[in-house]
Image (cartoon, rainbow, N blue to C red):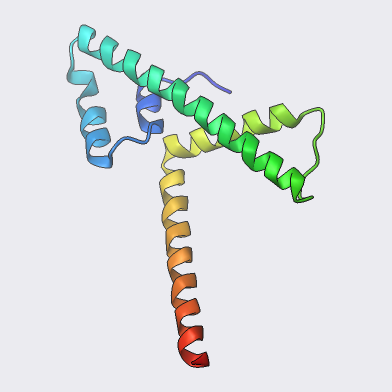
Length: 122
C-alpha cells in the first residue's frame, strides 16, 4: 500500500459524482482551515469505507472457501488486504465506476435475454 494524497482520498470515497467533482475542482481554492477540515472528514470516511470493504471482502473470500473455490492459506488476510487495496486503487483511478457500469449493462442484457427466452418458450 502506498501513501495517498487528500485528493486521492476524495476520489476514492463514493460521493455523489457532481459533489465529488465540485469538491475536487475547488479544493485548492479553499483556505488552509477549510482544507484541513475537509481532509479530516474525508480521511475519517475513507477509513470507515476501508473497514467496510475489508469486512465485505473477508465475507466474499470465506464464501468462496465454503463453495470450494478458494482455500484458506497462511496469507489469507494479506490476500484480503491486497484485494481491498486494489478496489481502492480502482476507485481512485475511476476504473471501479467503469466496472460497475459494465456489470450493470451485463445484468441488463441477462434480463433481456431471460425475458426473450420466456417469450419464445411461451
